Amino acid sequence: MIFLELFYVFSKIGIFNFGGGYAMLSLIQDEVVNKHHWMTVNEFTDIVAISQSTPGPIGINCATYTGYTAVIHAGFPTWAAVLGAILASLSVIWLPFILMVSISRFLLRHSQSKAVTDIFGTLRLVIVGLLAAAAIMLMSKENFGNPSESVFTFIVSLIIFFMSFVGTRVYKIHPIVIILLCGLAGLAIY
Amino acid sequence: MGIYTEIFLTFAKIGSFTLGGGFAMVQLMEKEVVDKKKWLSHEEFMNTLVVAQSTPGLFAIDMASHIGLRLKGVKGGIVGALGTALPSIIAILLIAIFFQAFKENVYVEKIFMGIRPCVVALILAPCFGMARKAKLNKTNWWIPVVTALLISAFGVSPIWCILAAGIGGYLWGQVTK
Image (spheres, each protein chain N blue to C red):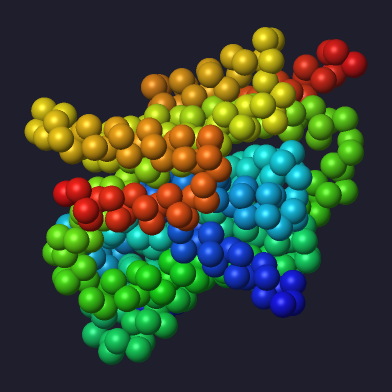
């Protein structure tokens, strides 16, 4: 039964996912391509590309797309595939949510204790490093263009990067406005 | 507007403009949840980041659940999580149904060529404000630097950094008591 399998597989993916969407991609690939043959490697690569360029968490994007494709491949009509997509997406969420309820309650109760204050004091510094690492790892050819192929694209990307940074840090422009402006700039320049 | 509608719409808005994964959302979420709605202080927001990063599940969804839970208990958490997920589900469903046309559209690619570097800047930007709020000083500046290096240059999982720092912070607190 394809719906039960989707529920089981994506519940598993949700609870074993530590450290963000990119970390979960290999797990999803293993389950969806290698074990269950719901799609080919090429289809999976397409999903990753789409997930990176559409709104929302990458894990949810993958779950939605896989749920849809798997049900279609099993020979069901579109409306059933839509249900499969929604089912797969919610399956990723529910177990971590239950865990989060208990963690939040625990932290609220002990938020004033010395141990919790000490631990979070250090962890707040670590989070700054985590964010910096995420940004550093995204400074890649995929996002800025390859300077040996197109100097123009690379320079335009650097300018967009710099202006976005100044726009948000110095002028406090809303991030949504900056994203929309950069999309328009891409459309106008390239 | 009821508080649940408000939570749902705020996170749906954040979910709609999260491109390139959970970290890209931090800047926007801080603006909406801390600066505008004043649901959390800056310090509480950073604690939320820590909790979301060190528990299983999707980063963005974990953030939304935790903030929703703090505001209105379990119902608030569910509303926050669904608000974050819904725009993503709708967008992907539309693309899954009309995939070929989307993939081959040159305008879509041009728009994304403009947006990608901007997303990197939006991830980097909150680091500086957060460093100040995390009380970065002459004795602890190496903690974020070493963390960033371990993860980006040596491929260490963030989980290990968080575990080590948590234990380290606890022990340091015991020693300096």
